[in-house]
Structure formats: structure tokens, C-alpha cells
Length: 82
Length: 398
Image (cartoon, rainbow over all chains, first blue to last red; front, side):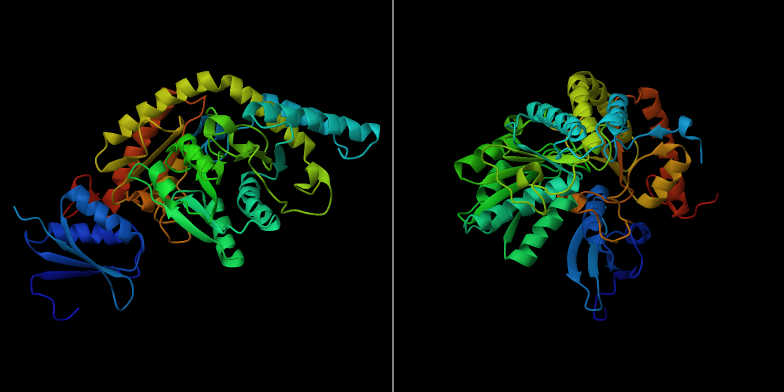
């Protein structure tokens, strides 16, 4: 994922099943300053449902969901600005 | 593992305990009506008479014509007879319509049968979406029907979250558009008011295992507009609609169980509905637990919930070790690795999903004990994953 902005944290959970991707996403978001973009890479199809639901539950902004050229998907979450 | 006597069975939606009256009818029939009901000797007539009485009882209870009940090997075969058999009947009579409509939350037996129509017989299918509580909008079904539509397949009560679909409204739409409505009532038969008229159905599939009959028995009820062609062929039994020797003892038990269930349904439903609301409210109080399905328009005995950051299989295992039998087939960690199509269609959390299905013997105290065990298991599993109730923990010392 070269060429992404510096403020982006990449969390690679490929090969790991639900609920690990959302757990890793939650940990990364909690440890990041507001306004950070966290990119979650996951090839667990459950993430397509659970990441948007988690963002809704935690009031985080899902700004993008794209197919990962290497398999799976990339979800971009912008952490909450205070 | 704790002894069965101290266990709490909360999986009635998978298999309802055999009702004692049905078990007695089954034992009696095994002793007296074991012969081939199609034979003309005295032994055969004994079995044939019992089969006839059981069929008439069930036809009466579901409001089907006297000849409108076909016995099957269970819910799956009933559904297949409705989906594949009705399509085959259309092909055989020269009907050229090749499109069916299903909801996105149908049981996998319906969806797999429809996929076979698509793969093997050139049908097309439209999947009608559901809202976040799992309900279809009848207007969406109407919009999915085209001049090429042969049938709509819509369940009565959802097997995972208990949502009860507006089948009667959909039935009226289907009649006005000359389309057949098959209602999969496997999850509601014997537990809610189920008849062809009440559900607006032309075909109604059912399983005896879901209301206290023996396992391996089901039926398809066929109304005046319903048509099926046989899937099992080879003899003239059941008016050539389903070949193979009938399980007369199982059928007798299925009829007795349905009669008992229908007479008990009022009291059982009031009790279960009260417990269902109690359990929903208790689970909804827990942090990061989402309760699924509608509050009203719901099956009286099904409660479904997801727990954030929790692996469903691990949760099920902990609950089982604590003496609680619940189902988690729709959780994220099923063997297929695919999330439940029902939860996906609803757009709700799949983490740590369990279905709790309440029976007539279930008590408030049992459900309170369940909620305590559930909360404890959820907290332990979250702690193990480094996640506490309210978001992530920096470090967890245990």
C-alpha cells in the first residue's frame, strides 16, 4: 500500500478469522490520535459486515472499502476528531 | 460435562423434545401399524387406516384439502418438493415461466434448491432484501414479480432471528399476479397459528421435529392453487406425489404432536412470549451486545444476539460447559468460514452470535442463570482477546 498518506496506519489481518480483524482495528483506532486513517486489510468475508457495524457502534467514520489487489479487502477508517 | 438433568435446553428451534403423547402414539403404531399401508390384507389396512386418520388430522389443522397433504422425510424434503416439485410441475404442463422470487433470509434448504433451478434448469431468481430486523417489505416482493415469475418462496418465521414475514399480504399480491406462494413454515408450525389461509399460502412446508413429533417426518400442504410434481418416483403411493414406503408410526406421531401443539399453543405462546421479552431486555442491558430481530412480528421462542469482539464457537463451547444448550450456527466462525447470510442481509454484527430458543418448560430463573453465564463467558473471551467491555484495554492482567 505504498503512496498512502503518512498519517495512515496499516493493520494487516489477512489469514485471520472473525472476530480478530475487528479486534485489531479497534486496538489500532484506540491507540491512534484523532484524525488518523487506519487501513484494515482483511480477507475474512465477515469483515464486510462487521467493520461497517463496528464503525456505527463506535461512531467511527468508514471512509472507504476497496478490494485488495492481493486478496480480500481494505477498509479505511478515519478516527474520531474530538 | 454436567449431567443432562442439570442442563438447560435452549435450542427448541433446532429440535423440539418429542411430546409424550407423540412418543406413545409412535410406540403404539410400531406395535400395531407396522405393515405396508398400501397392501390390501388386514395388517396393511390397519396401517392404512392409521395413515388416513393422521393425514386427515393434519389436513384439518393446516386447512388443506383432504388430499392436500404429502408426507416427506422432513423439512428439507418438504421444501424441495415445494421449490423443485412446483417448478417441475410447471415445466410438465407447458408453463414457460422461469423466474422465482425469494427473500434474502430464507433457510439454506430453500436457497440451495433455488440455486439448483438456476444452475440446472435455466431459471432466474430475484432476492428481495430485508430491513435491519429481518423483515421483507411486501412492496419489494410485488416489485420483484414479473410476467416470467412462477413462484414466490417466503418463510413464515426466520430460523435464526425469529422475524415473522408478512406472508398474508404477500399472498394477496401473489394471487393478484397469478403467482404461487410457497411458505416455509418449518420454524413456526405447531408454535404459531399456521394454516394455508392464515398465511396466504398455496404450498406450505413443515417439519414434525420442530414441534414435538419424531425426527425424519415432515409434510407439504397443498392448497387449491398449488401444484407439485414428484421428486421421488417408483410407485403410486401418496397419489403419485411421493414414492417410498410411508413411515406410518412417525406420521401418526406427527399428527398427534400437531394436535397437542395446536391445543397448547395459546398457553405455551403466552408463556414463551413473556420469557422472550424478558430475555431480550436482559441481554440488551449488557455492554456491546446487540439483540436481533423485531420486538413485535416475531416468533415467540427465538432470541438472537451478537457480542462484539467474541468468537461465537468459543462462546457456545463455554455455555455448553456451563450447562446451557444454545445454537451458534450462524456465527462468524462456522466451518464454512462464511458469515450467516441472514445476518449479512440484515447488516448486523456477526460476532459471537447465539440463538436462544425457549420452550414451554423454560423458566425465568433458567433464563436469568443463562444471562449470568453468558455475560461471564463474554467478559472472559473479551479479556482473553485483550478487549474489555468498553473498548480496548492497554493491557489485561489475569
